[in-house]
Length: 136
Image 1 (cartoon, helix red, strand yellow):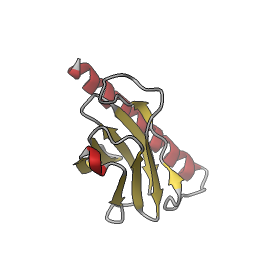
Image 2: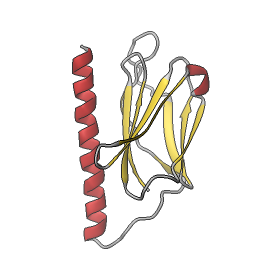
Image 3: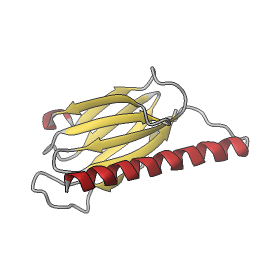
């Protein structure tokens, strides 16, 4: 089961990287360009399993970017959260696990990252995972 979950997470991550690249390509083809994201929510998709291992329809975790800083908020402090950020080449540029008591408000500076597309992955020990993409 864990192998299937890892395979699904990898497939979803690959799809998000492709979507982010398509967005960047469309911006360059249309000659619109893009700037740093300010006060922009990071759309998250996936399944978030809780401590009881039940699937909740409500995802208690949200993420947004403001002035080169990623903010992650969790309204239910019942699980550790691992935050992983990969660049558009699939190279991991950040990973840290936060204990349940620290997940109410996570702050991650992005100022050291190069301009480009990134994939955000949030996961927990119960098999929950959320994926999102952002451009800086």
